[in-house]
Image 1: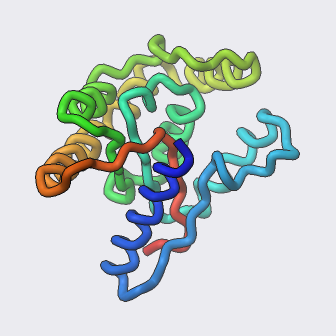
Image 2: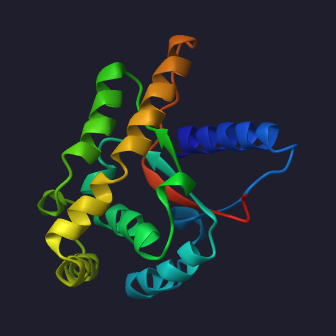
Length: 181
């Protein structure tokens, strides 16, 4: 839950700071930073602004991330707005090798028709509009293009997990790193 998520982010920030002379990244995390006073349509409308202000994209990624309309929209928008895969960092959400394999497979096998969580009509209509404008094939290609980055992250995660008793488990979210170089 929230405690594991916080611990994982603190761990990631600690690693980042160690690699960047003690400098910590400025993060914008949709679930924590979006104005709760705004309706979802307005929050989605603000998404491109947040993404454009970000230099890197941190993806806390479990096997269900690619079945979440909001997350897929963020992944698509990152690349559509000029972000690149070399500016994406993935932290896999997995506590076992089978979960790690499921994370990697979720990108390899992605298809827009597998989006299951868009129960809120507004999210569903915005997601469907994105797919209509971009095309099913294009959205599938863009999300699948993350596969190499995800697989490399899964390999690193597995290597680290071999040296620890209990890998970190997170919920999946997409985090924009603002001000990170």
